Length: 330
Image 1: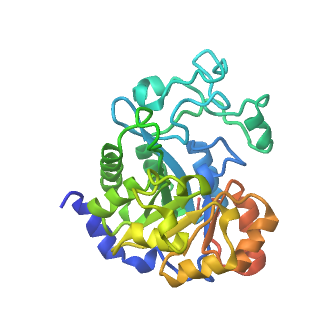
Image 2: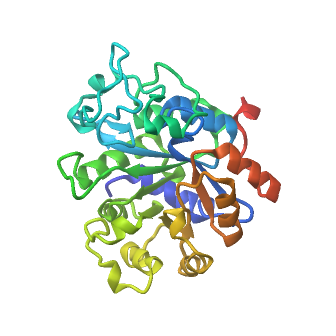
């Protein structure tokens, strides 16, 4: 058995701990730690989300040149929120690939604020800068959560493997990335609190082989569904619906299966269809109050959002069970 601690923890926890009833435990996920409020995928953002009170920290990972698992949405340094050691914004399209840099090199860059002059920066005008934030390791996030003790005792992690099957030279290959990720989860004894998600379903197939009890979330967009390189070789046209495609990709999964589509691709009927097939439906990235309310009315099992504060307020208004606020426990 490749990851004994991980598998043992999952068997002990059981599925009930991670698939609660939607009415009691709506899954409030802070996208990239809640990038509408704090610098994305930083320890500052994750700490802020814990203080606010979320069910799940959503994040992305890649591998450095020295094979350290780091938290980054972009496969290359993003000039929209990256400054060099001299405090200068990176020039457009000049960011080095994360995979080409060692951890020491990567952490010379500051990702603690948005470039307000960029189109990307203008989208998140409410984000509070935290100068000096570095791209963190996954191990440092696990350590942060453990250090918060009771304040973060129930928070979960939804970890996306950032791989593009059409650009294999930009990232680690699926197997090295998955093995490195599972090793970090096992080392931190976080198996009962982790879901692994990906648009590249090859990585989810590997998770199913190496850690079959671990929950897997199948991300989808109209673009990726048209290209079987994203769907592990499956042709979406051969299936009656996307939920049936996800069911085929997951196979006889020992762990929970989640379908995580772009929210605009959902209808009440397709949500019910997916749930009848035994999977949870967790759309991304939902930032408008009206869209959140509509998806809640349709029966989505949770929502991934850049504004967890807005979704938390709506959950309170609906009388849903609230994830504990870290501030109250500190």
